[in-house]
Length: 214
Image (cartoon, rainbow, N blue to C red; front, side, top):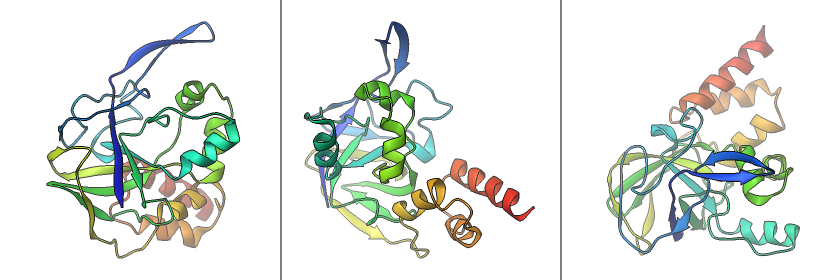
């Protein structure tokens, strides 16, 4: 496993199809060491804090392996951090990472909290209306880290697995139940059994389970 870039950026106003939009999806790679707090990496920010950021979504992660797929599909190269991720990584794809897994990035300790849910701003970033749906359908969503121990990281930081979550629920599995196998009660309960699952995903799955069991 390897960090290939650390990316940050503050919210900015863009114009898309004649309308102004404030978004924090535009990130750029950095070469310096940055402090990682419980809610974000220094120099980073989110525009809509009702759905982005916070302790459960402090760091957005995206596997570098997926870039080749999207570039082939779109027919052109993509900029670094196109998906708005703070960390671009190798060797940590959605089927390889479990919700609740803990990793050390030098002195910083992080934990997988939930899959990333792409919003309409990704579609605008890529100038591709179908982007959000396609990301969900492929399962190439990326995921979020919460920060268990604050500290500094740099592009040269080494990353290592500290602990696997006992439930063994991968990000890919959670995505499948969220978007495809929506009525699988046993699978929903399995996802909900993960203590480390973010509050928002717990709420969403509990609501679905209640509706299915009503």
